[in-house]
Amino acid sequence: MTSLAEPAAQAARRVGGEIWPITDHVVVCRYPVSTSLPIPLAVLAPGGLDLVTWTFAGMGEAGSGGQAPVALLVLAGPDAATALREAGELALATHFHDLAIAVPRSGTAQALTAVEREALCVAVLSAIVPETVGPLSKLLPMLRPVIDALPVPETAPELTVSGEGASTVTLAGFSVPNYLLLRGDGDLSCARVASARVRPGGDVRTDLTLDTVWGRPCRTRPDRAILLTEAGFSTARIVAAPAPR
Image (cartoon, rainbow, N blue to C red):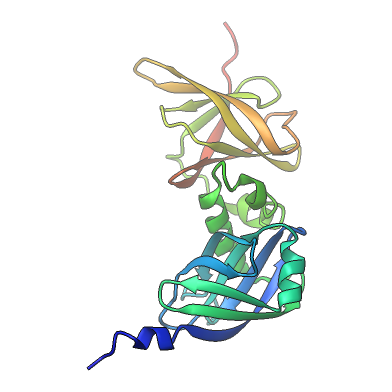
């Protein structure tokens, strides 16, 4: 007969991990996961750190090259990198059991594999909301190659840009994203949707006013746009505004 006390006896599991400071306050942590795939829930210690988003990688994806499964965490908090280095360990609550992740090593996030970067990019873009845009935007430069390679399907919604800049745009349909990730002038920027006005009619379009929250505002027409919503993200097809008659 299984005792109800048995899970408590298994509460502490130890694994070795690595951390990569993105800034003083934002850190990526990688550690191997077991076949039970314990889902990260919250940081238990050091205090003051938040689990902003997470993902698994190496789960048999195409191109993984037999890589062992790992978990990738994005952690944020005051002096997060220093706190982890001094503690030497991250205590993590999961749905299965608590984990004690030893993090003695620190390096550059360039050490992440291509598969890990792709998984992390999906997790980051899917998790950008008003509460997380600050820390997650710090990872965008590192994820730039993956962002640049995201496909734009023929069915992607049209984003019409008037003039040279991108402070006001028009999106086909009536769905309003929280943010737009734009590439223009060779740089990335992230803009929140400050206001939206739906144009009624058979061909429904929504005028969006944008306010840049990270990066430099586009001074020319952007050549790539990603719509960030509560439900995830999608690419858009950028088209020029029709010439006035």
